[in-house]
Image 1 (cartoon, rainbow, N blue to C red):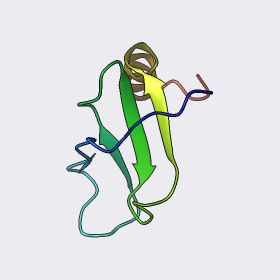
Image 2 (image 1 turned 90 degrees about the horizontal axis):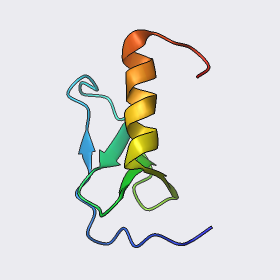
Image 3 (image 1 turned 180 degrees about the horizontal axis):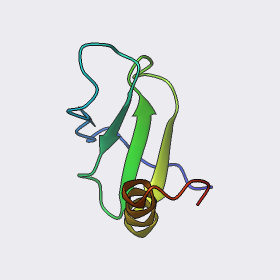
Image 4 (image 1 turned 90 degrees about the vertical axis):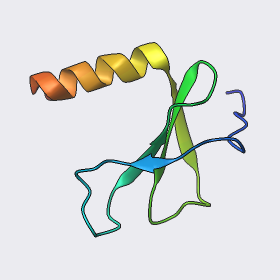
Length: 68
């Protein structure tokens, strides 16, 4: 798997995450990918997916489709 340069990532948490730190952050400003990381461990590993896969994931979540 190719290493993604996330040094310019602009991370944001969901507005639904509230005051706790138990959530994920995403960066959508990177060319061709969406990066995802654990907000409790910002220097830890990050996952990156294509924009198309992210869109499919979000559509499934909004539709309430488990395991897709």
